Length: 480
Image (cartoon, rainbow, N blue to C red; front, side, top):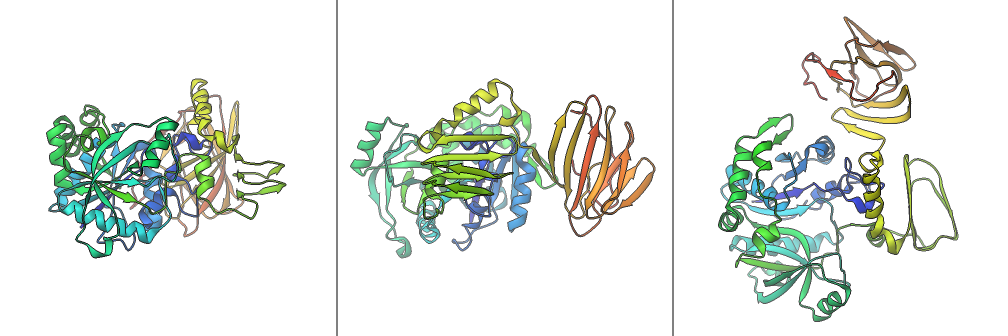
């Protein structure tokens, strides 16, 4: 049995303004109709004997992760919430401890949720070779055979070749790990690629759960101790397993590369040739995407004249471009980013300036995802705010009240059940109701179709003015 461990944390700041702290790149449909997280799970279909995945993410992204996984099925084995970031070694320690508690000693396949892989068949055959070596006790890392001298990746130097007993994967090259090296300068990267002895460090791994735990115990026992406590003291909350905050916060922060792979004598590397990219910049996204006859990739309402080799993404309105060559243009409801393709790695400096200025555009979009649906901020002015709210069928917002604001709800689509104090109303399209300050209220969708309303909030203080109450719809869990 192989248990996929999906690492779904991270912020992806180089893909701003689409990728943001509260909705990072792995949760966005950048390449096709599925998000990077969904594609990470979907590409495992038909590969060996795969169990439902273990998914690790942070608390801010939990509902988006759960909804995206639910929409593609099957259900994950668990969604584990990390209360604080502690890098990959603690995350994998938690996954290994969770896995051995449920299975005798499974093989773990560790996959970041933000990678693009082109050749699914070769990917599956490479995993078969990895599983064979993992069963023999090796700790496998997958090294990307470099197509160019990149300075943004760490490298791994291969040692002596390792043979395979598995005929279907006999053409997959494996070797001992001679050493890991940090991100090089350009001249050194050229030497690495020319030698043919170095691969990019992908961050993908494969090993038996007991083996990685024993190596962690040997080299970093404090990580295993803290993670064991965090797991034992964790609690289930709806569909999530929340690790104990204090225990996990006390865990040393380290990557699995530094904590184990650079120290162990059981490491091995399998050369990966299945068309990999970490989609770490707009330039990378242009490289992997399907282009038109002018070399352009466009998304949304885009109009061009004499534009070539460019990436243009219109999120909310018409974007028109004339005479652009080798450029990236990304439009969202609250930001527009324009850059030459060769400079898109520098988008991170814009993010740093936004952070320094305390700008909300670095953290979130106007659309906020919730377990029951989403809200889209349409207007935000002093004294009033207008939102579009969408509730999925059968879902409900918690019973609540506001001390400083009133709300006017207008039904646009679907059927709304509204609690206003002691009364309950059923509203159809074009009907409305008014919630006064201090009035207990709740919005529910009792129908089989989505409910869409327009909400107008008025008041002097609109932020952080929600008092959630204990009342719940009959037969339903209350969801924030």
